Every structure is written in structure tokens, then in C-alpha cells.
Amino acid sequence: QVQLVESGGGLVQTGGSQRLSCAASGRTFSAYARGWFRQAPGKERQFVAVITKSGNNTYYADSVKGRFTVSRDNAKNTVYLQMNNLLPEDTAVYYCAAAPAVYSNMAYSGHYTSWGQGTQVTVSS
Figure 1: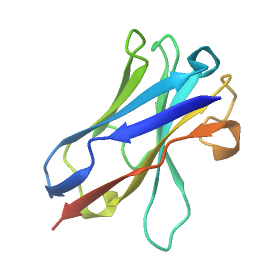
Figure 2: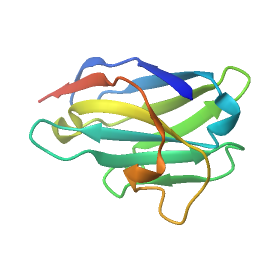
Figure 3: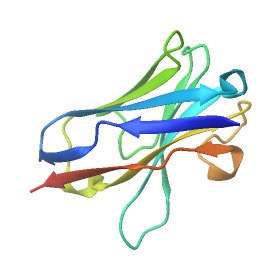
């Protein structure tokens, strides 16, 4: 099992930036792909971005493409989500997750076997 811990959330103004981190421990070799999801109040959990273990492949939800960047530092077992030009609709609890393989649809939350506890991001208008 992989343990994931997010950090970096908080309050930011519209148009601002924030970087989330997700540190992994435990059976990190099984965390081949690392993804980010978010859940706003009253809404379902939504895919945000994913990065493969090599870092060579990334995939983003249309709503964040061009504004968010996912990256990873394998030496630190840490994945980052750089969020720029934040909008009020980006307000949510952000979760990082780990999948043991790469599948055709990495936006499907069921592929991910480990989840962090979440970190709140609030964008004020």
C-alpha cells in the first residue's frame, strides 16, 4: 500500500497561483501513475491531471488545461500540481492518488488504489 500526503492548499485570490505537493511513502514502486482529483461541495469527485512514473506523459482535464501543470520528483517520491490563473470554480478539496499501472482512461477514479486525505483550495472572487 502507498501512503499519500497532500500539502500546499489554502486561500488564494482569483488569478493567483498555488502549488500542491503529494508525498508518497510505503510501496512507492507500485505507484506507477500519480493523479490529482478534486471535489467541490455537493459535486462528484472530478479528475484534474495525471503523470506517469517516468514523467514523460501527462494528461489534463479540459477545464484546467493550460493553467495547471503536473510534475514529479521521483527522488523525493513527490508529485506537484502547479495551479496558475486560478478561478473561483477551482475551489475544491484536492486529492492525490496513485495507480499501479497506466490505463486507457486515467480519468477514471476506480483505477487508483491509494488516496491522500485531501487539501482544501479556496479561490476568492
